[in-house]
Image 1: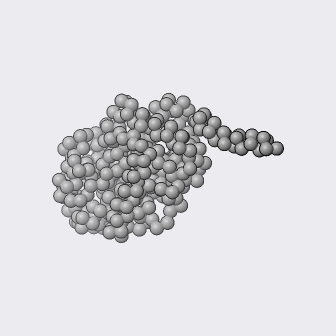
Image 2: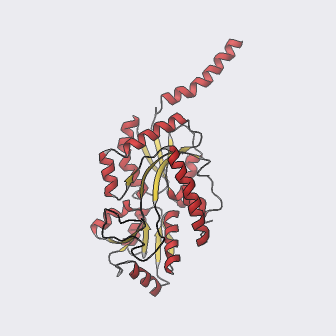
Image 3: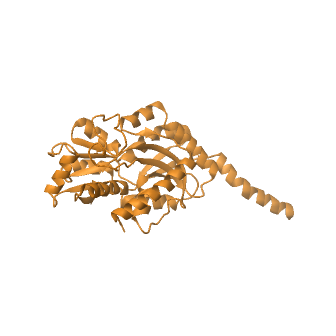
Length: 318
């Protein structure tokens, strides 16, 4: 009997280890909380072929847009902790939502295992090229002259926080119009449905090149090499408007450390593959590939920072 119990105990201990050793043995789902064509969707699809090659299994991208990516985050938080369901987790759901919602169906630190920061980037202020607005001063003047008509597109908390900061610092009034992805926000600007949007560079790169939208400023400390003629917010006359943004992969909490380490190693490799890195750079993104510990520290730092910003701007999304 003792031997039989010992054998059962050994099998129970050995099974998880064997599962980790064989990981991955089936397709991996990456849940994106925004619609197709948005910045995070574009980023993960650039990585998709290399990730599948390196992991030896298909990588399936699943879009679950809406509710500031809360739906997507909840899906992953409640998924089995086996490394087969991952979250494309940008700043918005992981650090802005905790600052702007009093209650969420997930906790960014308790319910997730950080894997790796994929890339970082500034936000960019854009308007339609048909709008008679050439710079930030023109935008401020336009908004003040048209208080009932000025609005902005936003698909995530980080864009809302950045725009509310802009309003606060310039004394302007823009009504928020929600969209499911930053690609849709850009299209709303082009179509004249909204006055402006502050958005991530990936979905803006093509329309900027085509001339259908105009960039007014970036939220980084320095000008972006892709758009050297576009001033920083400080240069445009709006001080203290630096809003660095990032996106990363997260797994459900309690995912085995060996699986997290396997995924981190692969992400860090993929973002520095020349073709991926070049395509990121063309969209204004800087490849990172951080460790799990580095990502965890950034999440903690940014939650503290944006909680203070949201409190000062009285942003409540409940």
